[in-house]
Length: 272
Image (cartoon, rainbow, N blue to C red; front, side, top):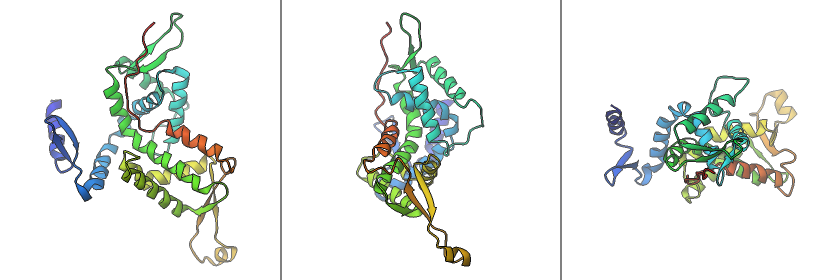
């Protein structure tokens, strides 16, 4: 039965989770083992993420709106999130990548986690989180928020390169990791998994492909000819992200920031 499976899972994780207040399970966080606990639990979670990918990204996108969202606005947010995390998840190539997300949105409506409200003219849907669906939306969001947090930290760290500074790629990634850890330690970020070097590395690769940054080799011509020294990639901001006012970079950071972890509350629109 489902209950027996859950009990069996908790028994396997008995060194990582603890039962508090009778029926509430939370990570076992005691001193030096805190980070290890989060990483091990994240490892087990990551084996299941592909089953929830489409529903999860739709949930995060919908939750990023202050109230409700039109179909066009919601799918635009989902598409941005899909492109942001394209290096994190392997999906089947498709000429219509948004099709699965549209199916996921309808699935959430069918399960009554999301409400579709139409005006008197029967026009386009306006989507909102239902009163009974907030718990399930929270569950879906928490699966993928750590990845969003990593990319937001990576983007925010690029402020250190404004307007025309450069830094070795590996040093930049270490700086991103340090920023992520500091934010977690100072309770400005809720996810230790956002410190993952794998996601931060993927973020630097993505930003280069988006032409937010450029990569240049600082290996001298003599060293290159003689094969002396290791190749060192240097990162710089690309136009217009390297403008002194930082506006273009701020727009990117804010765009990702809208998708970060925030409380999921009932936002069901009243039916007219």
